[in-house]
Length: 417
Image (cartoon, rainbow, N blue to C red):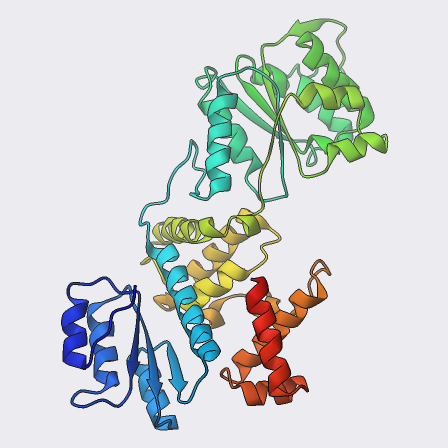
């Protein structure tokens, strides 16, 4: 809904009773100017954006408007397209700020601390609740850093086995020649250096849960031994001929496509079907944009408390960059970056220059060719328009086309969106 006011006084009175997202004001008006209105809004309303339009453009006026707090400065005459484009940019920034600051307390989906309110994370929370009620084997897949161990812990601590041990095992971090001994234990004298009998991870997890992280890194011979544990619930210690019963629930994870590995004979098909009873695929962080601000706030508070310093504030521009970053390292990468910013920053406000350079300039780097030519062209035209402050004549000159062609391309993009 759109509301109008004929003066600054009338506008300020209306703002007291009407919730407004965006104020568009002229610069020069009878009585108080648009700058006075912008200043009033910035001093009294944090959840509102402002645009200034004027028929008397000047560098001084633009600087004053921006310093006062106007998000956009549009000069007359302007087309309807230019106005709509400016409004869309302004409301987009408002949405980012609201998303970042709307919730002061991250939503905890389940122990030990999965954070997120996106649809994807709500589905993960529902999955955890259901999987915890069963004793079936669970396979958790997802890119590195997506929180596979957190999901495994959540399943365990919501299950009837919660009071028993949860034993995580990073299969890729243990040398192949030691993995069998670590998993199943060994008896004294079983090999050089085995000076005493020692239980393995499966015995330690008896009555509880063992989490085989990155199970795809195990060798084919080790997979045969794991298959026996799954089938018979028995382990045989290295150097022994006697098996021992264990009551262990197995959760496994992988960052690889196990089905593809089976086809290449790099993973046993029988083991794959044994662990692929209940499955969940964790979404990468780039598909959880709505959770990024919650995670930033959570990690900033956590590391600020550890360092004994105030929790820093992230500027709107910094949040915009963080939200648009690709996050190849997922949540783990985000956590590490926030820790670095909290520890190393000397200021209360973290801005774009404080961010790592790969992040600041990631938008300039080439991406995988997964978009159509029309999409790439539309993005390039938009970038050119932004670089010339939405001046269609200058943009057409930069693009090497006439203004009419540019207008047609923009209309085509608008119709397809």
